[in-house]
Structure formats: C-alpha cells, structure tokens
Length: 135
Image 1 (cartoon, rainbow, N blue to C red):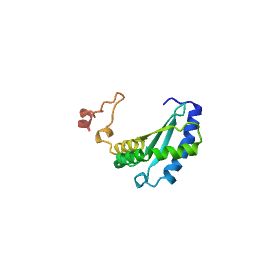
Image 2: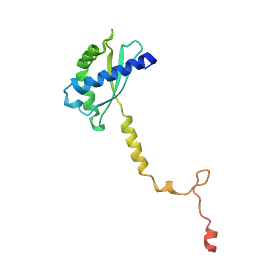
Image 3: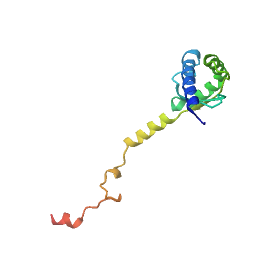
C-alpha cells in the first residue's frame, strides 16, 4: 500500500486504537494470544490493512474469528478514531516471526559438510596424501 508520512502517522494511531479494541473490547476466546504487529492506512484513509501474529496451528481459527468480528471492530474503531471516514479493515496474518523461528532452527542443525575446511573458492581442501606418508 502506498504510504506517506501522514498515512504512517495515521497507521500508528490506528494500531494503538485497534490493539486496545482487540485486547479489551472483544471477548472471543479465539482471539486470545493474538498480537497486532502493524497497521497500514491508505492515503485517503479508506482502507486499513492490519497485520496480526499468532501460533502457526491457529492461523485459520484466528482468520475466521477476525472475519466474524470485523463489523464490530470497524464500528468501535470508527468511534475511537474520530476520522471523517471509517476505513475498511483487511486482516492479514503476519508470518515473519514464524519464518524467523524456522530459519533459526535450521541454522542450529548445521550439516557436517559445513565444518570441512575450504579454500578461497569454496572447494574442500584435501590433505596431501604424500605429506602424510612421509611422516
């Protein structure tokens, strides 16, 4: 979504209000342990894209719960923001935290071939057999 300084500031304001709504105004147990990671507001304030994060196995459950509560969230957000236009809300699941955890786990399991000594071109250095026989 195209952004400018004003829409970034409006996005930050919307993120604070939306976070409060998700935390205190909604009582859906499917939305427990859901984190609001960011908001983007279009330049004309007609569209708000909200990014939420949750456990990997709860993506579908959270997506459906947000879709069910979308009207109530939009109504509460419109009252709390006080903008002339209440933006249409699009919820996106933010998977960056899960992807970072996956990469961290992959880096912990380094293959044994990575510990082989390599030359400047990346090829394995083979010890000279003749030098080992002389010793």
